[in-house]
Image (cartoon, rainbow, N blue to C red; front, side, top):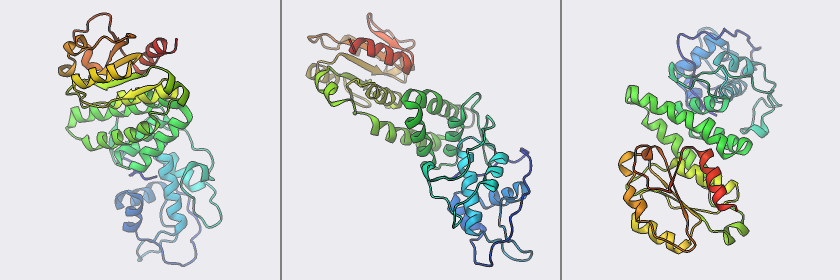
Length: 340
Protein backbone atom coordinates (compact mmCIF):
# COMPACT_ATOMS: atom_id res chain seq x y z
CA UNK A 1 0.00 0.00 0.00
CA UNK A 2 1.20 3.48 -0.81
CA UNK A 3 1.39 6.54 1.36
CA UNK A 4 3.44 9.70 1.27
CA UNK A 5 5.74 10.59 4.11
CA UNK A 6 5.70 12.20 7.54
CA UNK A 7 5.07 15.90 8.21
CA UNK A 8 7.83 18.38 8.87
CA UNK A 9 8.22 19.74 12.38
CA UNK A 10 6.91 16.63 14.15
CA UNK A 11 9.43 14.55 16.07
CA UNK A 12 8.23 11.02 16.74
CA UNK A 13 11.60 9.83 17.95
CA UNK A 14 14.48 8.95 15.69
CA UNK A 15 15.19 5.38 14.72
CA UNK A 16 18.80 4.84 13.81
CA UNK A 17 19.04 1.06 13.55
CA UNK A 18 21.13 0.12 10.51
CA UNK A 19 21.30 -3.23 8.78
CA UNK A 20 24.45 -4.87 7.41
CA UNK A 21 25.16 -3.91 3.79
CA UNK A 22 23.70 -6.35 1.28
CA UNK A 23 25.77 -8.02 -1.42
CA UNK A 24 27.13 -5.65 -4.04
CA UNK A 25 24.25 -5.85 -6.52
CA UNK A 26 22.63 -3.05 -8.50
CA UNK A 27 19.68 -1.43 -6.71
CA UNK A 28 16.97 1.11 -7.42
CA UNK A 29 17.61 4.82 -7.39
CA UNK A 30 15.78 7.22 -5.06
CA UNK A 31 13.61 8.41 -7.96
CA UNK A 32 12.70 4.86 -8.98
CA UNK A 33 11.71 3.87 -5.44
CA UNK A 34 9.75 7.10 -5.00
CA UNK A 35 7.76 6.33 -8.17
CA UNK A 36 7.16 2.77 -7.06
CA UNK A 37 5.86 3.82 -3.63
CA UNK A 38 4.06 6.95 -4.80
CA UNK A 39 5.97 9.34 -2.54
CA UNK A 40 8.27 12.30 -3.12
CA UNK A 41 12.03 11.62 -3.27
CA UNK A 42 12.41 14.07 -0.40
CA UNK A 43 10.17 11.86 1.72
CA UNK A 44 12.54 8.92 1.28
CA UNK A 45 15.49 11.07 2.29
CA UNK A 46 13.57 12.26 5.36
CA UNK A 47 12.71 8.69 6.35
CA UNK A 48 16.37 7.75 6.02
CA UNK A 49 17.60 10.77 7.99
CA UNK A 50 15.00 10.66 10.78
CA UNK A 51 14.33 6.94 11.13
CA UNK A 52 17.25 5.11 9.52
CA UNK A 53 15.03 3.38 6.97
CA UNK A 54 16.97 3.92 3.76
CA UNK A 55 19.57 2.34 1.49
CA UNK A 56 21.44 -0.21 3.58
CA UNK A 57 24.56 -0.14 1.42
CA UNK A 58 24.93 3.58 0.67
CA UNK A 59 28.59 4.46 0.14
CA UNK A 60 29.85 8.08 0.38
CA UNK A 61 30.35 9.68 -3.01
CA UNK A 62 28.02 7.28 -4.79
CA UNK A 63 24.36 7.48 -5.72
CA UNK A 64 21.94 6.03 -3.20
CA UNK A 65 20.67 2.61 -4.27
CA UNK A 66 17.88 0.62 -2.62
CA UNK A 67 18.08 -3.16 -2.52
CA UNK A 68 14.92 -5.34 -2.75
CA UNK A 69 15.01 -5.77 1.02
CA UNK A 70 15.22 -2.00 1.51
CA UNK A 71 12.16 -1.51 -0.70
CA UNK A 72 10.26 -4.19 1.19
CA UNK A 73 11.01 -2.41 4.46
CA UNK A 74 9.60 0.80 3.00
CA UNK A 75 6.48 -1.03 1.85
CA UNK A 76 5.99 -2.40 5.36
CA UNK A 77 6.30 1.13 6.71
CA UNK A 78 3.59 2.28 4.35
CA UNK A 79 1.29 -0.55 5.44
CA UNK A 80 1.64 0.60 9.01
CA UNK A 81 1.06 4.25 8.08
CA UNK A 82 -2.11 3.43 6.17
CA UNK A 83 -3.43 1.64 9.25
CA UNK A 84 -3.02 4.72 11.42
CA UNK A 85 0.42 4.16 12.97
CA UNK A 86 2.69 7.15 13.61
CA UNK A 87 5.75 7.50 11.34
CA UNK A 88 8.18 6.72 14.15
CA UNK A 89 6.38 3.54 15.18
CA UNK A 90 5.84 2.57 11.56
CA UNK A 91 9.59 2.80 10.93
CA UNK A 92 10.39 0.69 13.99
CA UNK A 93 7.88 -1.89 12.84
CA UNK A 94 9.34 -1.99 9.32
CA UNK A 95 12.93 -2.27 10.54
CA UNK A 96 12.25 -5.10 12.99
CA UNK A 97 9.65 -7.15 11.07
CA UNK A 98 11.02 -10.56 10.01
CA UNK A 99 11.03 -11.10 6.26
CA UNK A 100 10.55 -14.42 4.47
CA UNK A 101 13.27 -16.06 2.45
CA UNK A 102 13.95 -13.87 -0.54
CA UNK A 103 13.31 -10.67 1.41
CA UNK A 104 9.94 -9.70 -0.07
CA UNK A 105 6.42 -9.65 1.30
CA UNK A 106 3.46 -10.50 -0.89
CA UNK A 107 0.66 -7.91 -0.89
CA UNK A 108 -2.43 -8.43 1.24
CA UNK A 109 -2.92 -9.05 4.95
CA UNK A 110 -3.28 -12.82 4.56
CA UNK A 111 0.21 -13.11 3.10
CA UNK A 112 1.89 -10.68 5.51
CA UNK A 113 4.28 -12.57 7.82
CA UNK A 114 5.11 -9.48 9.86
CA UNK A 115 4.17 -9.16 13.57
CA UNK A 116 1.01 -7.32 14.64
CA UNK A 117 1.01 -3.63 13.86
CA UNK A 118 1.56 -1.21 16.76
CA UNK A 119 -1.26 1.06 17.88
CA UNK A 120 -1.86 4.33 16.06
CA UNK A 121 -1.10 7.76 17.51
CA UNK A 122 -4.55 9.31 17.05
CA UNK A 123 -3.68 11.64 14.16
CA UNK A 124 -3.64 11.42 10.40
CA UNK A 125 -0.60 13.21 8.97
CA UNK A 126 0.76 13.14 5.47
CA UNK A 127 3.62 15.23 4.11
CA UNK A 128 3.00 18.09 6.52
CA UNK A 129 -0.71 18.24 5.66
CA UNK A 130 -3.19 17.26 8.32
CA UNK A 131 -6.58 15.67 7.90
CA UNK A 132 -8.16 16.39 11.25
CA UNK A 133 -9.80 13.30 12.71
CA UNK A 134 -10.23 13.90 16.46
CA UNK A 135 -11.22 10.75 18.29
CA UNK A 136 -11.20 8.66 15.11
CA UNK A 137 -10.26 5.00 15.20
CA UNK A 138 -7.33 3.23 13.61
CA UNK A 139 -9.10 2.44 10.35
CA UNK A 140 -10.43 5.96 9.89
CA UNK A 141 -6.92 7.32 10.36
CA UNK A 142 -5.58 4.81 7.88
CA UNK A 143 -8.28 5.76 5.39
CA UNK A 144 -7.38 9.42 5.90
CA UNK A 145 -3.73 8.78 5.19
CA UNK A 146 -4.48 6.76 2.07
CA UNK A 147 -6.99 9.36 0.86
CA UNK A 148 -4.56 12.24 1.22
CA UNK A 149 -2.00 10.21 -0.71
CA UNK A 150 -4.63 9.65 -3.44
CA UNK A 151 -3.80 5.96 -3.15
CA UNK A 152 -6.92 4.24 -4.48
CA UNK A 153 -5.76 0.66 -3.79
CA UNK A 154 -4.94 1.56 -0.20
CA UNK A 155 -8.32 3.29 0.28
CA UNK A 156 -10.10 0.24 -1.12
CA UNK A 157 -8.01 -2.08 1.04
CA UNK A 158 -8.93 -0.27 4.27
CA UNK A 159 -12.62 -0.24 3.32
CA UNK A 160 -12.63 -3.89 2.26
CA UNK A 161 -10.97 -4.95 5.52
CA UNK A 162 -13.45 -2.93 7.59
CA UNK A 163 -16.47 -4.30 5.73
CA UNK A 164 -15.26 -7.87 6.17
CA UNK A 165 -14.50 -7.53 9.88
CA UNK A 166 -16.98 -4.93 11.18
CA UNK A 167 -19.84 -4.74 8.67
CA UNK A 168 -21.55 -1.93 6.81
CA UNK A 169 -22.83 0.15 9.72
CA UNK A 170 -19.50 0.41 11.52
CA UNK A 171 -17.62 1.01 8.28
CA UNK A 172 -19.94 3.85 7.33
CA UNK A 173 -20.29 5.49 10.75
CA UNK A 174 -16.78 5.01 12.14
CA UNK A 175 -14.57 4.94 9.04
CA UNK A 176 -16.14 6.63 6.02
CA UNK A 177 -18.15 9.44 7.61
CA UNK A 178 -15.32 10.88 9.75
CA UNK A 179 -13.00 11.01 6.74
CA UNK A 180 -15.57 12.58 4.41
CA UNK A 181 -16.44 15.12 7.12
CA UNK A 182 -12.76 15.97 7.57
CA UNK A 183 -12.32 16.38 3.82
CA UNK A 184 -15.37 18.64 3.76
CA UNK A 185 -13.95 20.73 6.57
CA UNK A 186 -10.68 20.97 4.68
CA UNK A 187 -12.49 22.23 1.60
CA UNK A 188 -14.45 24.80 3.62
CA UNK A 189 -11.24 26.24 5.05
CA UNK A 190 -8.88 25.98 2.08
CA UNK A 191 -10.98 25.44 -1.03
CA UNK A 192 -8.94 22.32 -1.79
CA UNK A 193 -9.48 18.59 -1.52
CA UNK A 194 -12.26 17.90 -4.01
CA UNK A 195 -10.10 15.25 -5.65
CA UNK A 196 -9.72 13.51 -2.27
CA UNK A 197 -13.49 13.43 -1.76
CA UNK A 198 -14.02 12.07 -5.27
CA UNK A 199 -11.48 9.29 -4.76
CA UNK A 200 -12.94 8.15 -1.44
CA UNK A 201 -16.51 8.41 -2.74
CA UNK A 202 -15.78 6.32 -5.81
CA UNK A 203 -14.07 3.62 -3.76
CA UNK A 204 -16.99 3.55 -1.32
CA UNK A 205 -19.44 3.45 -4.21
CA UNK A 206 -17.63 0.54 -5.83
CA UNK A 207 -17.46 -1.57 -2.67
CA UNK A 208 -20.90 -0.73 -1.28
CA UNK A 209 -22.42 -1.13 -4.72
CA UNK A 210 -20.84 -4.57 -5.00
CA UNK A 211 -22.51 -5.50 -1.72
CA UNK A 212 -25.90 -4.09 -2.69
CA UNK A 213 -28.64 -6.23 -4.19
CA UNK A 214 -27.54 -9.37 -2.39
CA UNK A 215 -30.52 -10.10 -0.17
CA UNK A 216 -31.31 -13.77 0.26
CA UNK A 217 -33.07 -15.08 -2.87
CA UNK A 218 -36.06 -16.40 -0.91
CA UNK A 219 -36.55 -13.11 0.89
CA UNK A 220 -36.06 -10.95 -2.20
CA UNK A 221 -38.51 -13.03 -4.19
CA UNK A 222 -41.30 -13.18 -1.58
CA UNK A 223 -40.99 -9.95 0.42
CA UNK A 224 -42.18 -6.53 -0.64
CA UNK A 225 -39.07 -4.48 -1.30
CA UNK A 226 -37.94 -1.13 0.05
CA UNK A 227 -37.52 1.55 -2.61
CA UNK A 228 -34.50 3.82 -2.10
CA UNK A 229 -34.23 6.92 -4.26
CA UNK A 230 -32.75 10.40 -4.28
CA UNK A 231 -35.13 13.29 -4.76
CA UNK A 232 -35.47 14.94 -8.19
CA UNK A 233 -32.39 17.08 -8.77
CA UNK A 234 -30.40 15.39 -5.98
CA UNK A 235 -27.02 14.02 -7.05
CA UNK A 236 -25.54 13.08 -3.66
CA UNK A 237 -26.42 9.46 -2.96
CA UNK A 238 -23.52 7.86 -1.07
CA UNK A 239 -25.39 7.57 2.28
CA UNK A 240 -28.38 6.08 0.45
CA UNK A 241 -26.11 3.46 -1.10
CA UNK A 242 -24.75 2.66 2.36
CA UNK A 243 -28.32 2.11 3.53
CA UNK A 244 -28.98 -0.20 0.56
CA UNK A 245 -25.91 -2.26 1.39
CA UNK A 246 -26.81 -2.43 5.10
CA UNK A 247 -30.37 -3.53 4.32
CA UNK A 248 -29.02 -6.33 2.15
CA UNK A 249 -26.76 -7.41 4.99
CA UNK A 250 -29.89 -7.77 7.13
CA UNK A 251 -31.73 -9.74 4.47
CA UNK A 252 -34.15 -6.91 3.63
CA UNK A 253 -35.07 -6.79 -0.06
CA UNK A 254 -34.48 -3.34 -1.55
CA UNK A 255 -34.40 -1.54 -4.88
CA UNK A 256 -31.81 1.18 -5.09
CA UNK A 257 -32.95 3.64 -7.78
CA UNK A 258 -30.03 6.07 -7.57
CA UNK A 259 -29.74 9.82 -8.02
CA UNK A 260 -32.12 12.42 -9.38
CA UNK A 261 -35.17 10.22 -9.81
CA UNK A 262 -38.02 12.14 -11.49
CA UNK A 263 -41.28 12.24 -9.55
CA UNK A 264 -43.22 10.41 -12.26
CA UNK A 265 -40.59 7.63 -12.36
CA UNK A 266 -40.80 7.30 -8.58
CA UNK A 267 -44.59 6.97 -8.78
CA UNK A 268 -44.30 4.37 -11.53
CA UNK A 269 -41.81 2.34 -9.50
CA UNK A 270 -44.09 2.42 -6.47
CA UNK A 271 -47.07 1.18 -8.46
CA UNK A 272 -45.02 -1.55 -10.15
CA UNK A 273 -43.30 -3.01 -7.09
CA UNK A 274 -45.90 -2.50 -4.32
CA UNK A 275 -43.11 -1.68 -1.86
CA UNK A 276 -43.27 -2.06 1.89
CA UNK A 277 -41.49 1.25 2.32
CA UNK A 278 -40.09 4.16 0.31
CA UNK A 279 -37.03 6.13 1.46
CA UNK A 280 -36.32 9.46 -0.24
CA UNK A 281 -32.92 11.10 0.22
CA UNK A 282 -32.19 14.85 0.07
CA UNK A 283 -28.71 16.15 0.79
CA UNK A 284 -29.59 19.74 -0.09
CA UNK A 285 -32.49 21.83 1.15
CA UNK A 286 -33.53 22.83 -2.34
CA UNK A 287 -34.18 19.22 -3.34
CA UNK A 288 -36.32 18.43 -0.26
CA UNK A 289 -39.68 19.04 -1.92
CA UNK A 290 -42.72 18.24 0.19
CA UNK A 291 -44.96 18.34 -2.88
CA UNK A 292 -43.22 15.22 -4.21
CA UNK A 293 -44.13 13.44 -0.98
CA UNK A 294 -47.76 14.49 -1.22
CA UNK A 295 -47.96 13.30 -4.82
CA UNK A 296 -46.85 9.73 -4.05
CA UNK A 297 -49.43 7.23 -5.27
CA UNK A 298 -51.67 5.20 -2.98
CA UNK A 299 -51.09 1.51 -3.49
CA UNK A 300 -52.65 -1.63 -2.11
CA UNK A 301 -51.18 -2.71 0.17
CA UNK A 302 -50.04 0.70 1.42
CA UNK A 303 -46.40 1.54 1.95
CA UNK A 304 -44.69 3.64 4.59
CA UNK A 305 -42.70 6.68 3.51
CA UNK A 306 -39.47 7.84 5.11
CA UNK A 307 -37.22 10.79 4.32
CA UNK A 308 -33.51 10.98 5.10
CA UNK A 309 -30.66 13.40 4.69
CA UNK A 310 -29.77 16.88 5.97
CA UNK A 311 -31.90 18.53 3.29
CA UNK A 312 -35.06 17.56 5.18
CA UNK A 313 -34.09 19.20 8.49
CA UNK A 314 -36.03 22.43 7.85
CA UNK A 315 -38.34 21.10 5.14
CA UNK A 316 -42.09 20.72 5.28
CA UNK A 317 -42.55 16.99 5.84
CA UNK A 318 -46.25 15.98 5.88
CA UNK A 319 -47.41 13.57 8.52
CA UNK A 320 -47.16 10.62 9.05
CA UNK A 321 -43.92 10.56 7.07
CA UNK A 322 -40.94 9.90 9.35
CA UNK A 323 -37.56 11.61 9.04
CA UNK A 324 -34.61 9.24 9.58
CA UNK A 325 -31.68 10.85 11.39
CA UNK A 326 -28.96 8.21 10.98
CA UNK A 327 -28.10 4.91 9.35
CA UNK A 328 -28.78 3.07 12.60
CA UNK A 329 -32.19 4.75 12.98
CA UNK A 330 -33.02 3.99 9.36
CA UNK A 331 -32.19 0.31 9.71
CA UNK A 332 -34.26 0.01 12.89
CA UNK A 333 -37.30 1.82 11.48
CA UNK A 334 -37.26 0.02 8.16
CA UNK A 335 -36.70 -3.38 9.76
CA UNK A 336 -39.65 -2.77 12.09
CA UNK A 337 -41.78 -1.95 9.06
CA UNK A 338 -40.68 -4.76 6.78
CA UNK A 339 -39.71 -7.66 9.01
CA UNK A 340 -43.10 -8.20 10.66
